[in-house]
Length: 153
Image (cartoon, helix red, strand yellow):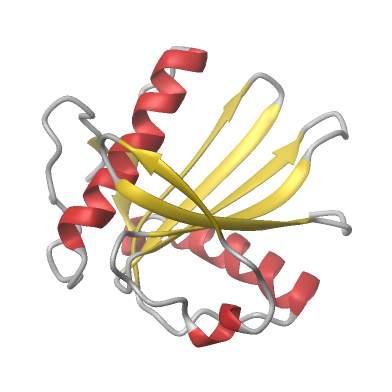
């Protein structure tokens, strides 16, 4: 069942099985606040089992672009379009959040990784990416990295 993420009253709904549930909920709320403020979009997520097509698309892009397979279980996913950008998000039990930004008319195409505060860099990403830090009132310290998508999806 879809869940509209509330960034004013942060909840761990749907993320309870993660050892980083509170930090991951803050990260998810941070994303929800961004899309509400910038685009007026309500950030709504579904259990990964109900959004398997989103999880599969993100997994395919990771595998085909960089031969990356995420070892953690996906908990939630969402896909939406804003300002000529197709966005997809998957939130994982490990505390990892992955987003895919794909311009519908060319332009920006990238995969972003965000790590919840307190989690280690997943081994499948550790040797491949450097992670920059940013502070968030909702999520604490977020570490993030990205790569540009070269293929067509």
